[in-house]
Length: 180
Image 1 (cartoon, rainbow, N blue to C red):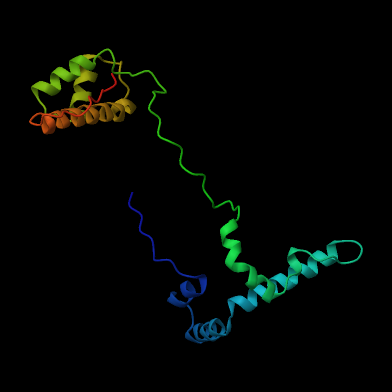
Image 2 (cartoon, rainbow, N blue to C red):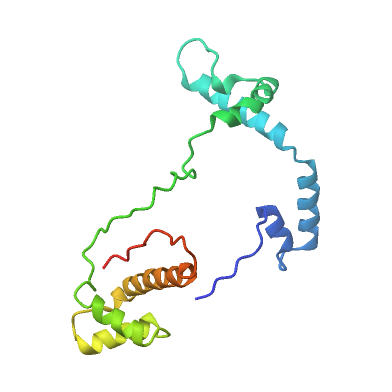
């Protein structure tokens, strides 16, 4: 399945591009968009929030985060971004890559056989080797294990490539072990 996305646009821009919308309505939208001021809109939102907070809180009104003026808010902006804000869109940092296995290697019992096939036919693809394994050992390897075999063969090929590259130099790199 191939998905194609339009370039990012505001809802107003999307409306203006819509072919069925009347040209008079489009002109009205363009005039309203020119008159909008995001900073003034933010000030109006904060004022309305403080009025709601005042209505919801019993007793005398006390100063709070929703009762700041626009100038106070703008003066705090240069340092607010540094403290950050927790939002649901923020992602946790990626975890460190694992070096241990979480599952038993399904190809441990046949790995030396696969290595023999690779050494005799190094151009063979992992998929062809996997199909060969499935024919030789019916029912032992599920189709979802193809990706695991592809990873193992890629690791083996990386080790072999390093050996070829560093074979002619005196300082051989440390051995990389392919986990079987």
